Image (cartoon, helix red, strand yellow):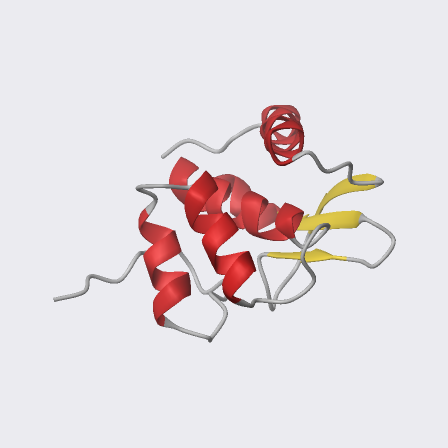
Length: 115
């Protein structure tokens, strides 16, 4: 899968921000070794540069997840329901719902299969 250009990724983030009706104060792409993204209390969202090498569905999941934190600060039921509503059919939403553990950057991201 080809790497997404940073400008295209930023456009993807801006698209989701508009859809979620949130306004990040800053969008950053940087080297991150322990997580895919973070959101500050001041509204800055930061994404791992490694995310640019991931699938579109995983990028969407991470983007929507972080942007939702601008509205909902925790991972409660409302957060999970809002995430699922915006990403219906995305395999990563099921993984989030099935596990309280975050999805950490360790090579390529792969959704788990449930039986």
